[in-house]
Image (cartoon, rainbow, N blue to C red):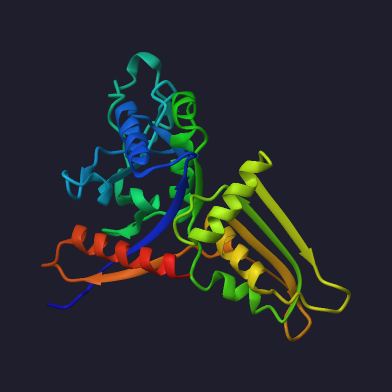
Length: 290
């Protein structure tokens, strides 16, 4: 059967300190129990579904569920009758069930506690959402006094595309390079992240910001240390660069401009959830190999 169905997936990196796979599971269980509804954009809101573990006997393998998106209408606002072209009187207004929300859509998510990455569909069943909107949803979800008091502040960073740094280092004349890194969870670039985490801990800092500016009419020449730090920043903050192209035109690049997304094609007789999980596992391998 032809693979004529498409889904697109993206990823975010979430971080708590101190962290462990079990602590991340506890964090998500807390979110589900709270049943929070948070804004994504304007009147568009979202909430998190209950989730299912891939293996109940080995929960750190991961779990999957749904992100629900809908229009959050304020029932106390006046209603307008388009036929009569007038505002409906309060006594005439139809009683709206506050638990019902229009313009509903859902997106699959899959969390891998050992690598603290959330994978999600950005396009599925003809519905779409941006990686940045998903990141905002989780940021707002985590921003609650009960969550902060129990887990501390939770960092949420959209995973950049694999070629994000390549775009930056390919700038013909690299005049400015800015790196911002929040405390990493040492998993992927283990040794380098451990060193950076220890350093930030020793100086009581939660964020590192470095800026490099080239000499006049010169281009920054990144060495191995700068490239490694840039890799860490890409998944734990961002990298911004500016300079000139071959024609001398001013150009700017940032890892934030290019979220990592991957298209998956499947047939109608294949299980979309299985396709999603397998695609996310491959995507994780690509992230770790960067």
